[in-house]
Each structure stands twice: as C-alpha cells, then as structure tokens.
Length: 79
Image 1 (tube, rainbow, N blue to C red):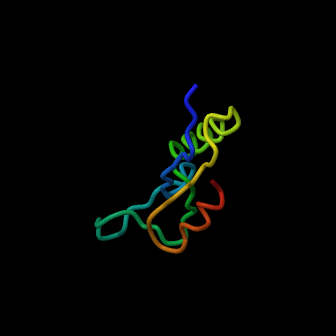
Image 2 (tube, helix red, strand yellow):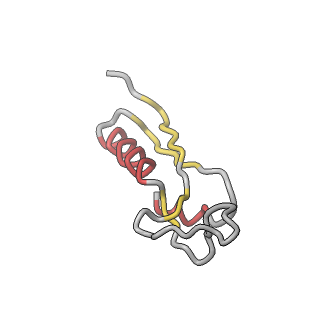
Image 3 (tube, helix red, strand yellow):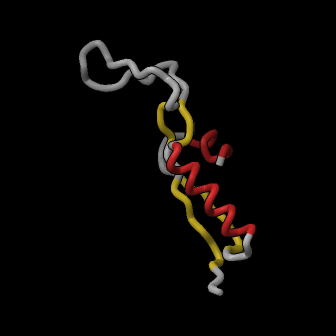
C-alpha cells in the first residue's frame, strides 16, 4: 500500500451557501458587506477525505492552505 507523507488541501472562502446573495446597486458584483462567509462546501469534502486518508495511515500529515486576505485565517482554523 502506498503511503503519502503530506496531503495539501486548498481551501476557498466563499459567501455562505445559506445566505441570500445581494447584487450591488450598480450591478457591478455581489455585495459582500456584512455577509457571512464560510468554507466552500467542496473544500470541506476535500478536507474530510484527507483526514480519512490520515486516519487510515495513508498520509502522515494534512496541510490546509488558502490565498487571500487575513480574514481567510478564520476559514483555515475551521479546516
């Protein structure tokens, strides 16, 4: 059986799936002011699967990473 030393999981911070999205009045994009943000549901699945790999002994370490502003640290802590 193959053993991986590390599993790298990319995590993206997105508008929470339960939030009703509002478009900016000028139509230029999504209004993100005072909107709850969370981890992308597909990223959650990837994190869960990587933890399963570690629990089965197929990986030694799980590393979650993201790129972006400091607010992303909250999302990484969730991972």
